[in-house]
Image (cartoon, rainbow, N blue to C red; front, side, top):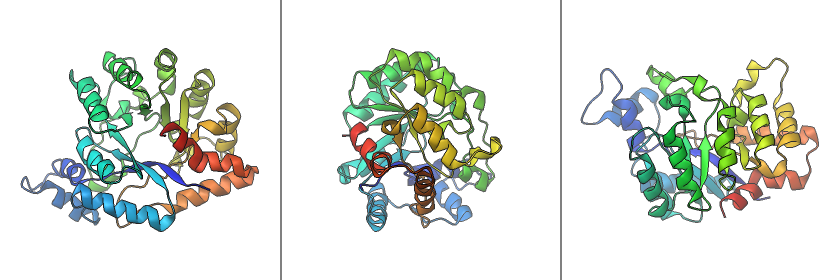
Length: 299
């Protein structure tokens, strides 16, 4: 069975510098260094070095391809460098805040010039409505470039690295309702829309959206700790409902791996594989979720 990962964060030096600049005792000359010291994590090095380290990690776990995500706006270049270095192994995702007037132009350049494949939206993080004109412009960019997906984080949003550093997270999760995607998903039916973590606490709404819009897919990533908001719900039950509503062709395995030395989070794969085994999922269904669907969407 081919194993692909649809959700790995590419925590570059630019990402850590953005965090470091928020610290009260930040060193303006080396903001990333102070953040890494606090976290106790490995320095990423150059984008080339980080890309090579990720390839070694994927090889160690038998992973064929992975989506790597630029985790702050303006860091698409780091991911582009990694994709250019290992084009057969990485698929580039990049975060965009759609509210600046040039957001669509910049996003188009990242796709056209750097061959990145997914625009990532975090409406709760950047505090905008999914009905915003800037979001519509980004979907138009994706629709005009076949093969481009839009990744939209919905539901609860907690950034662990910010919490660990004691940084505030002035997010607004009321902007993360999957139902707000209905109109635009229907307007652009050719654009794959990926919702991570099964909607991250808004499972019912995410399932409603997927039932109405066949271009909506779920990324299964992370520990899915949002399950605790639903008494009695289990990971196996989440998979059961997602399979019943969206079907096996619209689930993409993801781990939500991010930093070193932890590397790739095998426990997430083990838990999800066990949940599917508990349901009695066939080998064909597991092959689609853990690899085949990713290869189809990002061929």
